[in-house]
Length: 218
Ligand code: HEC
Image (cartoon, rainbow, N blue to C red; front, side, top):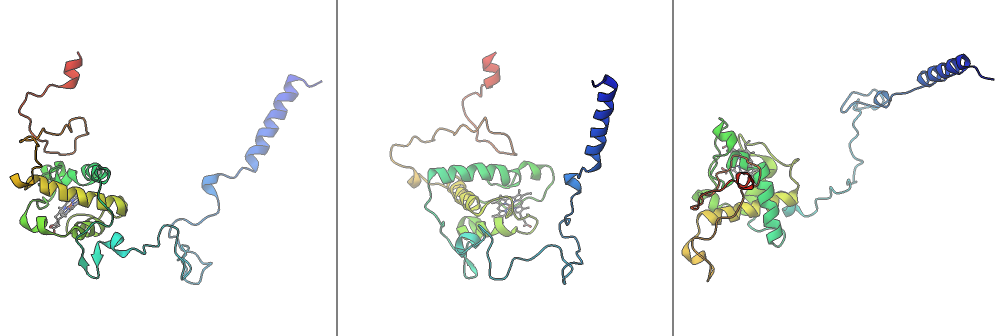
């Protein structure tokens, strides 16, 4: 019969055996990213794709969709039909990625600028109001001066949604009476963006007193 003492020593043995042949996953044989390798003639561990092959999702055969350009010039159309859904997606992405500098209305006075970052030009200048859509796509994709590019953070589809939303923002700041649909109240009701997280937005002003929802609940 096994005594308690024997059981304990067996347990210890088993433990020792386990640790002896353990290989940590974080310590497995592998190359660190971009490390040197003597195995390949070019001494690079990172291998280029085999010539003539295309990685899944990297075909980019629609060059306008991926560059916003026709030849060397920016085009002035969206590569897909615009819808409210695309515009809403654009507004959401714009408020996340662009508004911190450009502000939610695109006047270039976002929170990061208020804290000292170089001020971008307003989208509501004559020059940028006339800039073709593909130009905005190109700025997001490749950056512009002090502005970094957002190619890795924002998918091409989302970049186009943002571009569409910027055009809507531009229209919103330079609309005339002729742009108002028949039967629409003027001024139109201010949209309620109040519950979205802040990001240096210059929120529209409302004439009625603002009631804090949390205060109201008390
Ligand atoms: C970190 C701050 C910052 C963010 C975030 C940012 N921008 Fe900019 N943007 C700038 C600055 C600064 C400039 C002016 C750069 C210069 O003149 O050197 C600029 C310029 C621009 C211009 C004008 C180019 C011209 O011809 O004058 C466009 C269009 C633009 N940004 C779009 C965007 C969009 C769209 C996003 C979001 C995807 C975005 N930016 C995010 C800082 C930013």
